[in-house]
Length: 360
Image (cartoon, rainbow, N blue to C red; front, side):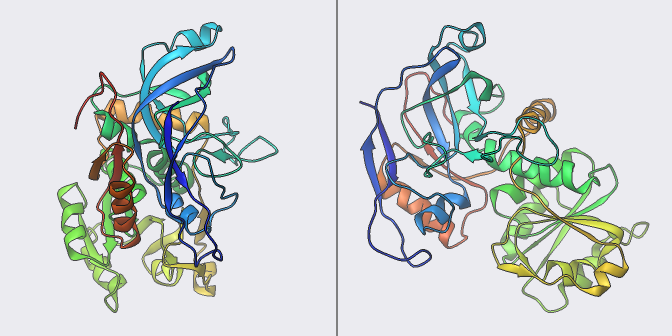
């Protein structure tokens, strides 16, 4: 029987509890006509996994493998031609289902169902195997190792939609501000924007992370904990373009109050998360300058395909912070601890040893 890692139920209120990890066995899946079985070689953490352990995520449940990011080898398939074509291929997995190609949001009336740890989707990637519909796969980019490929799906998709679809301003020579650099989505947005020819600026509460972002192509950055950081950032902008065209934000808090002073009239703030504060003030000063705040979360199957193709074309690689080996609860707990402390710079990955898997 295949093994997986899930959360174990213990008493506690949402936000106060921290569910322990446990190793479980799952049934060996049998593919239906259009399904495939993937032998997973690596999986990666996202902030939603931390929220699940704190029971702060909708549909949190037990006995379902954690994590939504994964890469692996297709080892068996259903009988349909669309499934059979994937046999023996190395694939990355679309992290959710129910959203085909609508720019507005999921078409499925039950909504978007992300893998890992919830009642809405019983599949998860922190496991030895997973069974998925053949339509949810993309061939893993050849230039990426298993570890790098596992780091791509959810953060890459979220960054793609937030930057390209929602801002409409990811153009060569345009100024893009990415807040909270160091997390997976922010770093993927940085990678995409630099590859697109944008002038990218970042914020962080950690000077070392700002310097690392500059090594990855950012033009500059400021510490958001410092008073008047928005003025310091404005001083970094090119003389010929003393404004920010768009902000890609995962923090919330005062991004509208401070960001609207930097943005051009009609500029866009694309918000994919609120790690600092779940509330934002929308000020009259932003209204008078026609600033738009747009929520952005995950993305469609089409956007996932577009994102993977861009990664292949530009030869991009996700930033990996740390890797642990195997379904080892103690080692995986260490990754979660890093995320709780916001100590990582890039993705936290679990390599699941399989014959034929590549190494970073």
